[in-house]
Length: 233
Ligand code: ATP
Image (cartoon, rainbow, N blue to C red):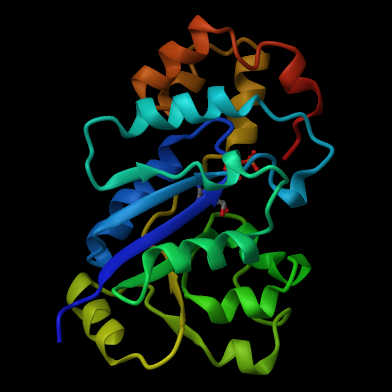
C-alpha cells in the first residue's frame, strides 16, 4: 500500500513566530518523516480572547518570512479566512475533508496547550479526529491526569527515541494516537519576546526570531507599545 502523505498541522497565534516554533517544525519533519508542516495562524486563539493580538496580516507576513525558501513549511489561511473564529474541532474537520484519505494528519501542540486541552470545545473529539504530537516545553508538566482514562491510553511516549524507532511505532499504530516528544526543549515564548521588545532590549530579542522577522518587527515597529500592554499570553 502506498504510504500516506504525512502532514503536521501546527496551530497557534504566532505573535510573533519564533525560533522555538521553527525548531519544532524542523525537528518534527525529521523525526516523524513528515512531508509537510502546515502552520495555521489563528484569528485570535479562542482561549486567548481578551488579550490584544497583533493584526492577522502582520502575523501571516512574519510566518511567510520565517518559512521562505522551505518547501515543506507552509501556511494555511483557513482560520484567518473564516468569517467567524473557528474552533480547532471545526478547523480539523475542514482540513480532514480537504486532505482526504490519502493523507495522515498530525495535530501539533506544546505542553501548555496539552495542559489545558480539556477546556477546548469538543476536546475529546479533537483528540480522536487525527493523530497528535505533544511537544514538551520547559516548565510545563506533562501529566495525563486531566484527560479521561481512554484518552490517556492513547499516549505514546517517544521521548528519547530516534527517527527509526518512531517510524516503526507510526507504522504499527492502529487508530489515532497522541505522541509525546521532547525533541525540542527551548525556553522561548512569544510573550517573552513581546516583553523584551516592549522593554527595548534590542540586544536580546532579535536572537529569538529569524532575521527577516526581526527586520520586519523593526520596520513596522511592532510590539513597541500598544500590543504589549495587554498581551500576557
Ligand atoms: P504566547 O507566549 O503568546 O502564548 P507561544 O510562544 O506559546 O505564544 P503560540 O503561537 O501560542 O506561541 O504557540 C503555538 C503552539 O506552539 C502552541 O501549541 C504552543 O504550546 C507551542 N509552542 C510555542 N513555543 C513552544 C516551545 N518553546 N516549546 C514547545 N512548544 C511551544
